[in-house]
Length: 489
Image 1 (tube, rainbow, N blue to C red):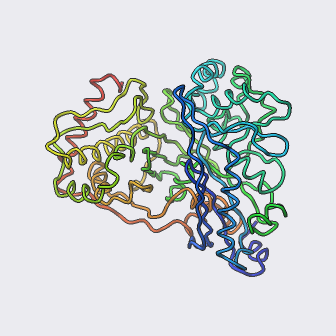
Image 2: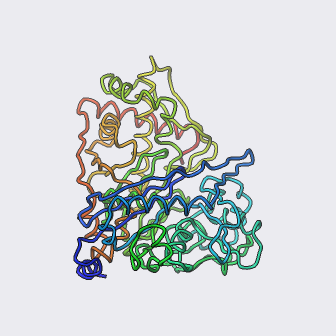
Image 3: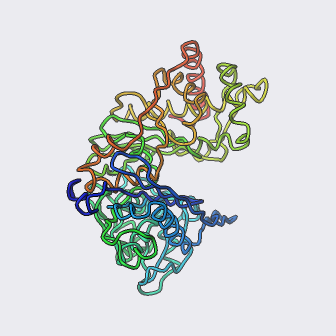
């Protein structure tokens, strides 16, 4: 649908789009205009996932729709008559979270969350059964993959007609009133082959997942249907508003930071460090550390997610501003820190033996804080070098978003470690990325046009000249430490 058509659809009013982000702890909705200006926003809490000693992580999937419904209703109430201008929406969520539903789209089992680790045996079976395919597409099924989680669900829900869905699939079905395809981004780690555009049947069969229980797959930003009368009455959305396919939260965050063109790179620092790039060709990593989502309009989004990031600072969240100021004044740390809070790393290298370390004794808590900030920056530099070694094009400065990007001190440290400016993109989150996908083909002709119009202007953060050389030496020492521990080859 062209922009002109969308304007006619809303009665001449400037069209709006909505982005829905179903995170772990809450649902967030943002309604934006064609220029990216925020028109309304709302958030609704979700119940905390229940974690077990066996590695389980589950959430009541029945809580998703009421939270999405209420957040949308609050936005439309805030907009009043202007809500009739909402032309399209898209839903994004965490990768690997799945549930089972009956024919009425009611969950019949708790959702298995993205961090559930019970599927190690299923993942091993799937790796062997689909070995040739995984090598081609650069994906390695793991215990926390959607494929392993689908296998767990299949064992628990053998009732006839029980379908296996990702979070956005279920929410889109509730919005349009009929089953919808899933998007290739959420399907990627659930056993989907983006090269051949089909489910990896041999792997699914090996773990007891009947592909007939799974939805069809379409590219992101594709029309799935329009808001039903029932959903319109519950949410305040206009009947006929388009629902478009989304992407995983990490991919949506990448789009929101403006990394949509070949060569662009974005680092999102939330709980973890996520680094993603844009490539015209599939970037193949034989180790599976770097994997690639399909770009909504062709091409690929190579990258990965570390197990370290903002979580490194979890014990000082109430003191961050104070510690940042002191760390900036202190200058480069005299100790090395790999601030991993759990065992095992997945990016920029993969080793289940990896553990956080501190090389040397920090003089005080300020130096420890500074060393942690530097450690995450060293991981970012290592990740960029890995992408480059695999042939991923990297042009221009790294864009950055997420909670970690709010720290000017951290951005300056990262710029100094990289030896070039970092572009800080404010307010670039998953809801904005979802709104971009909704706008693509509705209020804007394509994703590039939507991103150019709707993403926030980036702020350039320069390296600290007097720290670049010292941090380069510290990075080489950090790299040597990883080599010495056998985690890098």
